[in-house]
Length: 232
Image (tube, rainbow, N blue to C red; front, side, top):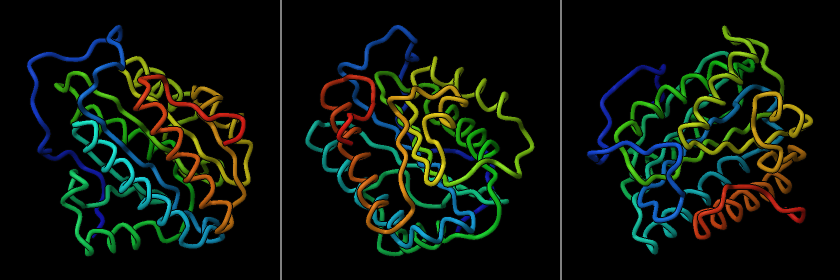
């Protein structure tokens, strides 16, 4: 049950004021976690490790948000030559076994790599659900193993969109397999400390998602910008 991206109504909490660029990450009470996942054919070498990594990250951040009395909202976009917004509850607590089956099916590899369009649509979705939410942290997690070869917008345009989104408070994480993740992420305006390269096999894909979990947990608990350490 995936669907082509379109605007819809989201059940998010409404707040009276918008977060400004100058607001600190401290005292955030809402986390928005958006995955933008490459499901092009070449991702098959990762096996089910991408799904396992997403599952672990969801459960870990759900527990962390609960412990810190924060709200957590989840969105998952997948892309090959088609871009889909996975039709699951935005509150991870409401996820059922069927929802997890939908996620697993939705990231099975196929097709081409439409990365820039997927980022664009994820940003549009993000703007729709965060516009009136104050005191938030927002993480955009991009996982891909190749250069864009199908989008209708350019790298330059994608970089402009990410830069503007970052000014609104979004924090980007770029995880690249079999590509120079720092170079590719930096070309999109993503901080090099938030880019991580990995080899697309089951074991190393699991390791990179473990590093993702650690980086996000450290960022949320310390209110520092997200980034990877040398060991990660």
